Image (cartoon, rainbow, N blue to C red):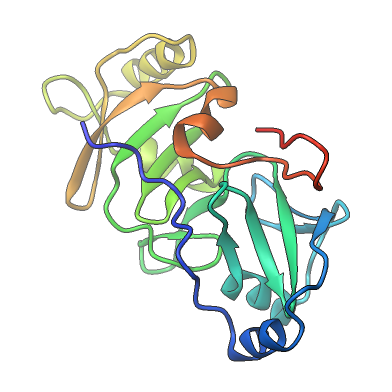
Length: 210
């Protein structure tokens, strides 16, 4: 089995204005505790959802990860670390039927799928690990197949998902576009270590919390 995709700490492609500001003011202190990402893919500023479309787009274009697995938004010369309520990405199906991130990036080929104890579906794609938007859960559940490769009937689907949520392996496969991946149980607390990210980056002198 391939290793799960992990955050790429390579130099991201920030906005040109951001790169200029970083070069001009290279030693601006980092910011913690202001910006968050909720399970619905909404950016939170001190806990309140952002609604300004231009600001949301700016954050999405300048969202990246460092070598320690800490996700941040590069706000001009200042690095603003993001508190993740679950995963660094939230995946959804767009108007063309394509699976994309909350910032609009294509998820690409699926590499892994998991269900946690609360019934959340997590998917690993090209950008890394993401929580599926609950509004698209029914669509992806409809793509589950049994050990014989057959679509599940409703009663069988519910029973299989309950087994997954309890930590068992009912032998399900998720089929999406050109990928077919096993669906396995996972504990929510195990996701950061497995996929190499930090949920709650802390300022120097404090301890990062997964």
